Image 1 (cartoon, rainbow, N blue to C red):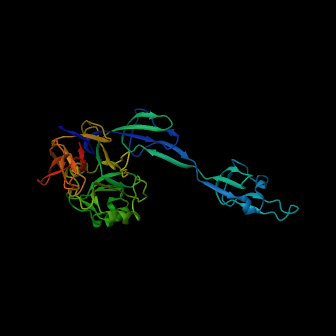
Image 2 (image 1 turned 90 degrees about the vertical axis):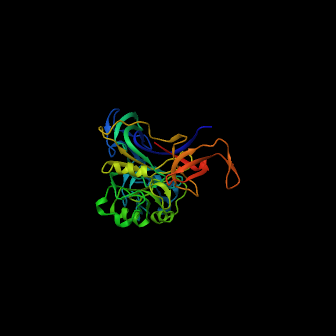
Image 3 (image 1 turned 135 degrees about the vertical axis):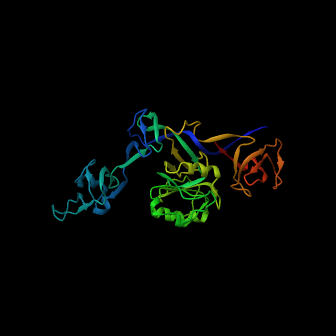
Length: 375
């Protein structure tokens, strides 16, 4: 067999990126097909239902639940404010009446004579969806959102935390193997997408948060540093909802790993350009990778290909990254694809390939232990 297929990360100088931007519930789409949009433009908006506040009036007023509808001074659909009197007991001969002051602000959604509770719905929560990708609206999804097509430089990472962020690309590392230290992060980097080299230290990430840096992209990060930044152990769920203030993306993996030369050179070439990043990561079914998206200007050449999930051809000469010990993080190219399974150090048999590493070393690893670096 001359080649096989394997998933991988996309690192592309020019590609066509399609962003599907949709609302969580039906709402209003603010753009039309053919419109040109910028990353921060709002393309759709809606209002989520507010929080529910149950008020147990029967207990508070010491009356039977069935009496509550008659004691209400406000009816369903009325807007009430916290502290406002919404119900009052009959008292004795019209005297000694007990008022009930609302403990919530919102709209009365229901009054129950069975439970004695009043349900108040809080203010609607506005939701806006931004374009994320600077480009052209290629499709409008009525009541849902739109699809935006953009010609861009596109880089996928291994892992990230934090959601979408926007800013100008600022490269502060002089080489892909330079670690990112706290003293390199200054107030001047506020609102920027900061590109480091190798491992980002925990104090550097915390300094970035303090300085208001939009995002930090580097080669690797230590698991303990990540735990300290988050304040808890990260589970296996999707990341991207963390409220750190700064999105953190690593392009290679965990540990002292230098950023791949090609990735570093590509990001360095886009110094000063506007970029959008998303740290959301999912490593189970429906894999989602963190990404850096840098739109191309009209004079930067025509894009090719299409960004998205990559399933490429694993063949001789293809660039790969080894994703298992003892060569975890090593970059190279496929040197040979033996057709017959071979016995591994564990005494099990598996199909293997030979990788010509960037260091000049040639190693044999199971095919399942490599990841294609897509062009």
